[in-house]
Image 1 (cartoon, rainbow, N blue to C red):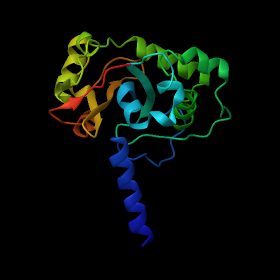
Image 2 (cartoon, helix red, strand yellow; image 1 turned 180 degrees about the horizontal axis):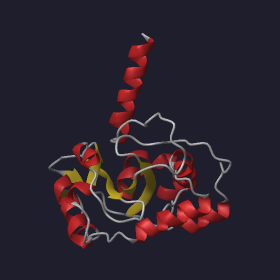
Image 3 (tube, helix red, strand yellow; image 1 turned 90 degrees about the horizontal axis):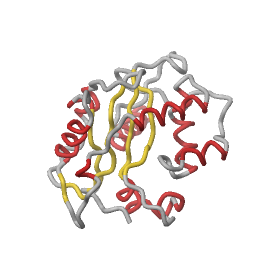
Length: 216
């Protein structure tokens, strides 16, 4: 029974995250292979979960794509929740990130779950997050939306590849939920160069019609 329960829990991690289950090995923080930059489409998040996040969804500021996180990855699996003395992200650092990560809860959670495994200090990790964000050109067609517009997952991926020279077709994938575009995930080397990651692409959303709610 315990073995079956553990298997069910592992399966739920794969289903919910869209990524392979976290690896359990002896590697230390900073020992990883590449990053996934996860960009969340904020209007979809707020439509489904907005009541739980006033800082992102309840203010007058309108967000489109934001940074969900910059996740250290192994070629198979990923580390998470590594030990660190720096548990709480200072308010001053949170405030500097609000243009790309609008919620203090989001910043803190991403540090504990993923940034702690980067081998960097909080300052250096979030500096790297911003550098990764600045490398991405958001496609123009995804910034000029019409009400009730639908788009295919493949078209979203193609738009990012076309707008970002060097981005690999198998290095970008879409995450969806209830026919809503939720995230675009982009694979980057440790030097923040675009790279392939076939494992991520295999688990991508393949829906033909996704809604992209308009920013308020």
